[in-house]
Image (cartoon, rainbow, N blue to C red):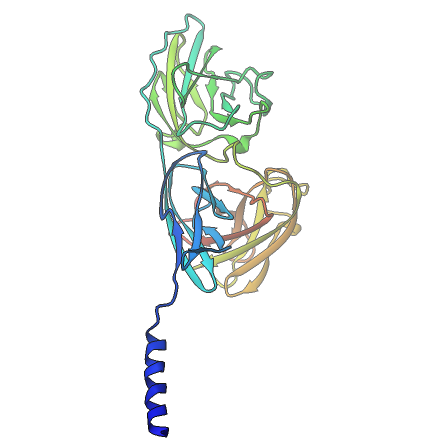
Length: 339
C-alpha cells in the first residue's frame, strides 16, 4: 500500500508541475495615435481584469495613468503593465497628421502671413501663437499681445495669422492654452521652414526654434512644428517643493551637479549656481536635491567635472513632472554641449 501511495503522489506532482501559469496580458497590445489622443488599455490575468501598475518608457511621447494612454508628441515608446511580478507591454506609436499645405493669398504691402502646421490637432480651444519682435516678446495674453493665429478653414493642423511687418522683424512659434495664455515653456522644440523669405538662426541649422528674421513683406511663410518643448495641452506641475534625483554615467568621481531653471528665487538660470542649487552626492553616480520650484518649471543640469568650476550640461530643457519628483540620467558625451 505504501508503494502505491508513493506512485500516486509522484503522478499528482507531475501533473501539478505541468499546470500552465496564468499570464498577464494587455489589450490592445499595439497603439497608433495622434498627439492629444487618449486610449484606455486593460490588463488581465487569466482573462480576469486586474489593477496593474503602469509606466511609460518615454513620457515625452506618451504618458499613462491607470491604463489610460495619452499621446504627447510624435514618436514611439513602450507602455508597461506590472502585476504580481509579471509584466506585459504595449507598443505605442504617435504619428503626425498629414494634410495638404493650404494655398493662402499674399497679405499685401507691409504685412506678412505666417502659416504653421502642427503635428496633430490641438486640444480644444488651444492655438498657435507667434511671439517675437514681429508682435511682442511678452508671454501671457496672446490676443492682447497681438500674437494669436486661427485655424485655417478646412484643415485640422494648419494655423495662420497676418501681422504688420518691418525691417529685421523676427518671430518664434509657441502653443497657447485654451484660456488664451502661453509661456516660453510652450515654444516649438523642433520645426522647419517649409517656404518663405526668412533667415534662420545660424546656431539652429534648419530649425525654426531660434529668432527667424523675415526679409521681405507681402509673403506667406509656411513652417512646420514637429514637437513642442511643452504642449499647452499637457498638465504641468504646480508650484511646490520638488525632489531631483540624478544618475550620472561616465563622469569623474569628483564631478558635482547643480540645478538651473526658470523662476528660481536664488537666481534663475544662474551659472555658476548658488550654493542652494548644488546637488548632494550620494555616491555611485547618484545625486539629489530638494528645491522649491514655481509652476510650469523647466530646468537644466550644470556640471563641474572637476568638482569646482560649473558649466552648462543639459542640451535641452527638462519639464518638471506633475508629481514634483524628477528622476533623470545624464551620460558624459565626447563633448559637453554648450548653453
